[in-house]
Image 1 (cartoon, one colour):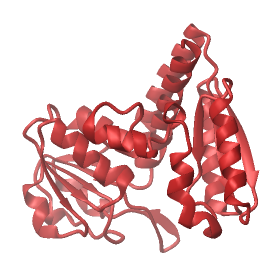
Image 2 (cartoon, helix red, strand yellow):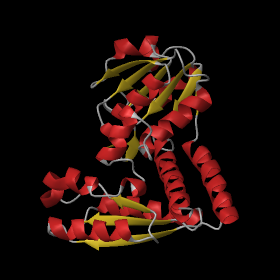
Image 3 (cartoon, helix red, strand yellow):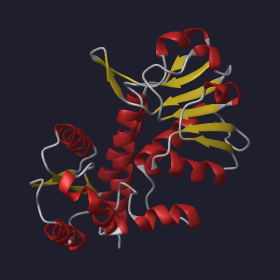
Image 4 (cartoon, helix red, strand yellow):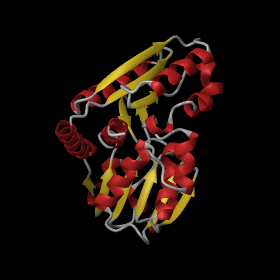
Length: 277
């Protein structure tokens, strides 16, 4: 099974975005709201800051204590919405425990035109009923890989395992509109895999997907992240897949780089829209 390099695809997209920004004189600015002291959030923000710099953009990090009042966060979002020098606004998730009951309200406060995560109710609703301004970066990363490695998508049998709104639910809508035969299940069941041309597996357990269940020529996308035996791993047991024809986007080195590259793609489109009026 051919291992797909998410980093290679991400680097290709990043280079294209940087060249376009230079040609158009665009310097995208991403504002990131960081609430609380979650170390994982800090790490992801660092990766996004580095990615923004790589496309010729900038970041504005707004750090707030975990117990910050909801109104203060909403006021900050409102100010960013009105700032013409900010092109994308990102609420780093998860927010602090005290604000988790208000997370949906905070996301809804972001201007859909600056919602580069694609998480606002407006963009999620438009994904279902029309044409959203921005689609979840995770969903777009998966779609990118599907189009590159699975050929024409209409008629393909696609298995989606999980229930997240940013990956599984968004992809289900997109792929149905593409003319695919989509099956969505909240938990992994190996009996569904032999009939699947494409499988995107977000939920399961470390190494739960074995080679014996995989259809010849299938595309597998691992969207699960675990820390086991001192290393990062996903749902798919990569060590078993060598003798099978097909493609695998693995963990690590797969979805992670692609997610951030597609976030930058959304940011560049937002900057272009705002700067060109």
